[in-house]
Each structure stands twice: as structure tokens, then as C-alpha cells.
Length: 360
Image 1 (cartoon, rainbow, N blue to C red):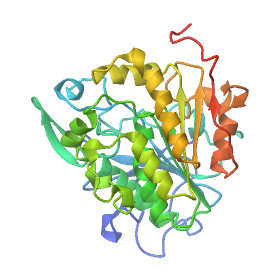
Image 2: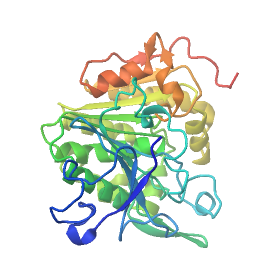
Image 3: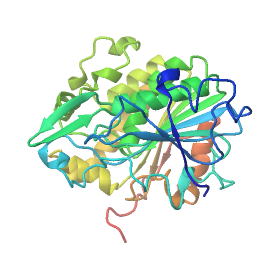
């Protein structure tokens, strides 16, 4: 891969919108962003912050076509003293040296001819706040104080996209795991901003199975109201603590009838089951509840598509299996490529041969 170039955001030129300087003497006149080919690391500047006070950065891979994929990173979540403790393996708390370095796999590999986004602008929003990219609150959990500022960080990255990819032909908003929820939460805002532009939302292994009352807990500790799209009539006066992910998909799809929403899941996703257990649920119930959620969204939204694979693997878009995995004879890569390009897709369901819940 090409080496990362680290670029500070010059906030004096406009919050989170300009790079390198404001004058016409920018050395890269043919590329007004001033970015090098390959992945560039952009410092977030003042305001954005990771959970324990570390600096936030995001990454941009310039494209050669007027299309952009906005990807939210996965990495767990934290909502109490145990999950938010220093050293907890429940979530990633910094943008570290391993973020987008080394071997780039899945859709991060822009050298792969089969990558649907090979020529697209690609904006990668790291995750270091434990709040699914949607929080805006400082919360003390026991003896640990966490900056749940995922919405602030994501907003800085999106500001950059809006300024520098002002009139794209197509947009994909995606992410795996926690990033899938970030993609779900932010997609309506991207659709509203790019009114008239085809926008596709793809959540990778982020179905939304939760125990009753869990959303009330995370709203209290994260304050998710900051990204609630009040411009969607059904959500104008909604109480975040009573909502479900399934209802949000239904309301988004009903409002943005010309846009596309979608989920990819595996029938025996060990990670989603594990987090459901951490909430206090029975992991044996997860698969049935996931299927029920998919059925409920599909029944009310013709602009929602689902791919359920016969596997226990968590996440696909950031792994080499993105280019080889199939279910019911349909390749994941082809299905997502068609979605990205506005081609109609059928729902894919591994049933009745969904494999084993245990790794073989």
C-alpha cells in the first residue's frame, strides 16, 4: 500500500472543510483537496476527541470518479463501568497506529480490480468513542470518565465530505458492526444533504437485536438525540428510549422512498450474539430475533434489501472473504456491487441450509 500522508485540518479556513491552506497557491491545483494518491490521514483539530481524551483523525482515499463511499469503523461499544473500564476489550478507545496500515483487505484495497469502490472517493471514519458514532455526552462510569463524542467526530468527517465532494453522482454509506449502526444513524442526514443524489446505506452485521430497555440505557449515557433526524415526520417528536433499530429502518425507508437501505448478516454471528448476552439476553434467541427484524423491515419497505449468509463470521466488508463469500449461489461482492450501482437485487437468505452455530 502507499504510505499514509498526515494532513492537518486548517480550522481558520472554515471548520473541518479546508486542507493545507486557503490560497490559490495550493501545490496540488489539479486536486483541490491537496491529498496524495492512496490513503491520507487527516487530523480532526479542536473539538473532536476520542473516549479518553486522545486526538481524533479520519482517513481519505481520493477517487478518480465522482462517487464517494463513507465508511464508519466498527469496534464494539461501552455503556457501563465494566465495558468502559481502562483496558476493556469491549471497544476501541483510540485512533492508533494500526488503523488503516499494513495489509488492506476487503473494500479498503483500492488496488483490487474487483473492489466495487476501487475508483471511488473513500472516507473512513475511525471509531474511538464507544457510542456507535452517534453520541454527544461526557459520562462518568464508576471511576472512569468517557467522552462519548462519536457524533461530533463523525460530523467533522462528514463536513469534509460535503465540502470536497459537493455534487457526487452516487454515495454509499456503510460500516461493519458498530460502524453499521453509524451508517444507519447517519445515512438519513447524508440523504437529506445530497437531496436528489442516489444514496445507498449498507449495514454489515449490525441488525439491532437488543433487550427491552437497552436503548434507554445508552441514550442516557451517550445522548443519541443529537443525530435524531427530526426532518423525518415519524421521528419529529420521537423519544429515543422507546425506538428500535427496526422501527428506524421502517421510518427512514418510508420517508426516503427513492433511496436504498440494506443489511448484511450471518445467521450465527458470534459477535452480535455475544453483545446481546452482554446486554442480559440469551444468545440462543439472537438468530430468531434477527430474522424477525429483517422480516418486519422487509414487509413495510420495498426499498430495503437483506443478505443473510450461512455463517458465524462477524463482518465481511473489511475482510478478504468479501471477494469470495456466497450464499444461495449469490456472491456477497456482486450483491453489494449491484446495490452500490443502483441495480435491483433480490433478498438472499441461507434458509433452510444455514449451517452450524459453532465454528468447524
